[in-house]
Image (tube, rainbow, N blue to C red; front, side):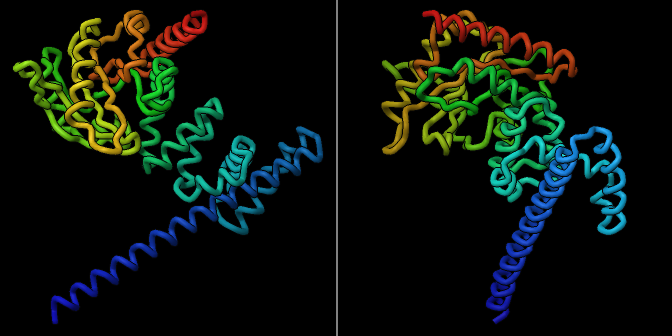
Length: 332
């Protein structure tokens, strides 16, 4: 009897908690949509009057009235954010859809970003991967958009790996590695911090095996890490290199992928893909080898997050190089 009552209590608790979550989500969506509507209406009113001075005067006056009547959500600072929000996210249907998964606090972080492309990139990832506000801020600080763009440029003609799936470089500052680490240390640190590692490489990766053994012509070969990507429906082989990428690394990864394709691929799965993670890439070699045609991606990993200006400079240079490669491909 006691067991039955306990089970009933657990079921009812689950129903109540689910309903509470739905109520919170609905209330957040309604509030975010309201803020968009308020911002849009004020923008339209100012535009109709066609006087910049009028806009400067009406916002402080109007926000003071709204704050007095409806509370601190409508301070002048917040009202101006609502105006920016409506100006930058012009499609109400997109706003309503995103507001079901993103809070107003998420949007406040997105508003200052320079381009709409960046805003939508982070908004969609936040929604799909259910990032907290803290995680969204971290992804922006570590330039996930720019790093994904660099990877996309390498994979632009790949039929195996969709855009916005991978990054280059990856930042593994959470591994706590010392300067004299070896590949085994890197592999062990990744497995120790597997949750953080998957958060950095992207949602959808599920860990399968470390040091995957492959017997070829009677010899043992070992792949560092094997993952499965649920969305891509394919195995993902990851080979770790503590040095600079070398052309011979391609042949090794190709061998791993062909073995996995023959002996490990299940019915309904796509062909396996490979990621070679190196301490330093070699962009010209990667370009000449056309690794993307074989479903292979080469990416750098950094074990320390550089200072903001240094990070921006490095990624800016990498983007220039990646775009130059794309332009050269167009001439071929």
